[in-house]
Structure formats: structure tokens, C-alpha cells
Amino acid sequence: MKTDEDCIFCKIVAEEIPCFKLYEDEDTLSFMDINPANEGHALVISKEHWRNVHVIPDELISAVSVTAKKIASALETRFSPDGINLVQCNGEGAAQSVQHFHMHVLPRKSGDELKLNWGLAAGDMDRIQEQAAKIASTLQSTG
Ligand code: DGP
Image (cartoon, rainbow, N blue to C red; front, top):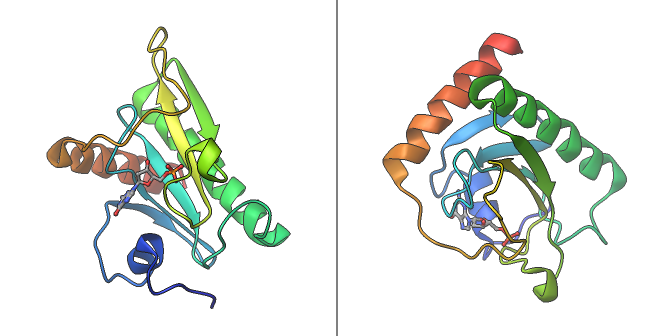
């Protein structure tokens, strides 16, 4: 499998650093974002290291999309947000900060005025862990 030893997401895939895991299958992994733009902000990544949309193989971007749909459904069931964005950033001008293909699953509140460049503020880890447990249990009960 293609990996990059300097990549933080490859280290999460290799379990060298921890994450609040929501779901995994052969090709994808989903976990909570530790710099959440909103409550319940989750990430879906390809396990293989591909930098962006321009290079990731079709079957892996498809697999990431299917997992993102699954996570979005669990967020919808558990938290009933006012909306959900799927966001995927490529390149400096698009505010891509981690150079490993990933999709953001972003619950929205009406009027939150979330901007695409939402910044990287540290989240409350206890709160993120609590949300992760709720989402993971919803995923288990809904398949
Ligand atoms: P982007 O800026 O689109 O490349 O998104 C990268 C996201 O990854 C950003 O919202 C913060 C998040 N992130 C960065 N480092 C870590 C980490 O070590 N663990 C987790 N769970 N998320 C991370």
C-alpha cells in the first residue's frame, strides 16, 4: 500500500498516532476532526496515501464517497443537523492543510455562516470523544 512516512493521516492509518475512529473498511477510514469547524465534524480518508483529487484512483475516490455517505447518514440520524456539507480541498489556495486525500463531513446549523476557510482551532477532546461514541454506536445499529 502507498504510504508517506511524514504524513499525519498515514500515521493514523498505521495506528502510530490515535484518532477517534468512526468506521473503517478495506480502503477507507473515518475519524473525528480534532480541529472541528462545527460539532460532529468528521473526516473520511483513503487508507492509501494519495495527495489530492488529481491523483487518487477512481475506485478509491468512489470508496471514500460511499463511506462519506454512510457517515453523513449516521450524523443525520443521531444529531438531526440543519444540513450537512461534504467538502474536499485540493491545494494551498483551497486551504488543504493535510496532503492526503480526505473528505470533510460537516454538520451545519442554519445561520452558522461557516466559511470554506474555517481555520484550524483546537477542539474540546472530551466533547469530540463523546460525539465519536454516539456516531459509532449509530453506525453499528444502522449498519
Ligand atoms: P484540510 O485543511 O482540508 O486539509 O483538512 C485537514 C483537517 O485535518 C483539518 O480540519 C484538521 C484535521 N487534522 C489535522 N491533523 C489531525 C490529526 O492529527 N488528527 C485528526 N483527527 N485530525 C487532524
